[in-house]
Length: 339
Image (cartoon, rainbow, N blue to C red):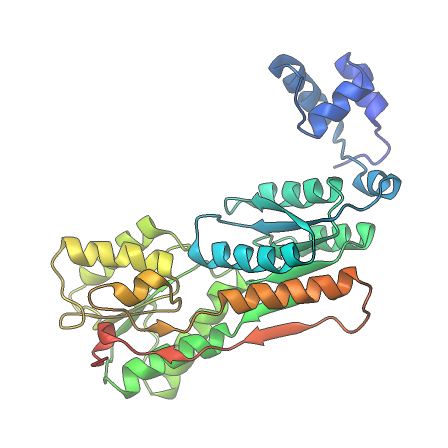
C-alpha cells in the first residue's frame, strides 16, 4: 500500500544519497551508478514511494510535443497508426515521442507517467491496461488530453477511435458461410480481456449463430496476437480428427504464424483449407494465394485520433466521442474466390 506522505527527502535520507540523485534515478537519467540506482530503487519499493507527477507537471510549462504509446512497435497495424499520427502533427509543427510497451501493463503505466513528466501536450494511447482506475486517476490529476485507439475503455473523459470489430468479423464469417458454404470455421483469436479480441470473437459467433452453425469451443484458439502461438494453434486445429475447413485469423501477425505451419506441412490454400484475416496489409495481397481480408483502416484511425487530440489541445470543447470505423471485405483467392 503506497504512502502519499513519503517524500524525496525521506527516500534520500534512508538511501544515504542526495535528493537530486533520487530524482535522477526515478526519472531514469544518466550519471548514476548501478549500485546507487539499485539502492535507491530498493528504498523506493520499501517505502512504497510514488512520484508526485501532478505537482511536477504544474511547475513546468507544456512542451510542443505529442506522446504516442503503443503495445508493439513491430506490429503493422500500430506502426501505421504511428505514421499517420506523426504525419498529422508534424504538419502542425509538433514533435513526437514514441513509447513501445511490449504488451506489458507495467511498462505502459510507466510510459504514461514518463510522457507526462516530459510535458507532452497530449497522448495517443493504444492501451492494454486492464486497471482503468489507474488511467482515470492520471487523466483526472493532470488534465492532459488522451485519445484511445484499438481497445475500448469505459472511461468518460477520453475520446476513442476504434474499428468495428464485431461488424468486421461478421462480414468475413458470413462470406465464408454464405458464398462458399464452409461449415467448420476455426478462429485464431487475440486475448479476450482486450475489447478488440473479445468483440472480434463476438462477431465470429454472431455469424455462426445466425446461419444456424454451432459455436464449437474446440475451434477457438487464443494466440494473443503472436505468430508462434498462432503456428501452434493451427497445428492443434489440423490435428483434430474432424478438421476445420476454414480458419479466421484475427490479425495479420497471427496469419503469418498460421501460414508458416500450412506451408511447412504442404497444406494447400484454398483447396485443402480456406483462410481469411481481419487485417489487410501490403504482403497480404501478394501472398500465394492472396488472402481475403478487410480493407485497412489504420491510416484513417490514426488521422482521426490525431484530429480529435489536436482539437482537445486547442481547447475546443464538446462531448467526448467514440468513433467506430467500419471496413468492407476485400475478396481474394484464399477463401476460394476467383479474384
